[in-house]
Length: 212
Image (tube, rainbow, N blue to C red; front, side, top):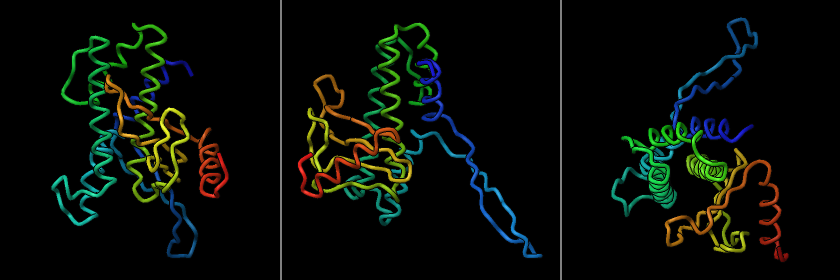
C-alpha cells in the first residue's frame, strides 16, 4: 500500500464512524440453528478514546473530579491531549487552517499530503499509526495488560511500568509520559501483530529472570 492510501485509511479509522457487524448463533422455534447479525455504528478511535475517559470513570463509581478518575482514565485523557497538541503542530507545520475538532484537522491534513515531500508523508503516517495503537489499546479496558516491573525494551527509554498491551488486538505501546523539549514523546514505541511476539518473548525473559 502506498503512503498516501495508508494515511487516508489510518485517518478514516481514527476519525470516521464505521459499521461493526457481530455474528451470533441462535435457535428458532423448530430448534434449527441460525446465524444472526448484530450491527452497530461505532465512533472513530479518537472519539472513542475521549469517551472512554468518562466511561471508565462511571464504571469506577461515577466520580467526575479529575483527581478521582482511575489511572487508565487519566492515561486516556493524557493521550488525547498529546494527540490534540501533535495534530495542532502538524497543522502549523503544513500550513493547514485548524478546524473545530481533531478529526476535522486530521482530515484536512490528509488533503494536504499530496503536496508534501516523501519524508514528511512518512513521518505523518508514523504518527497516525502511533495514535491508532494508543487509541486501540486504551479503549480496550477489559483486556489491557500492564506488566509490572518490566522496563520498556527501547534502549533510549527503559522506563518500568509503562507498557500497555491490548491482548485481543495484539497491539501494545509504551506509555512513557516524558517529552523532548519540542513536545514529542521520548518513547511512544508501538507493537502490532507483526512485532507483538517479540515483545511477548522479551516480557517472558524479564519476568522469568533471564537477561533480555
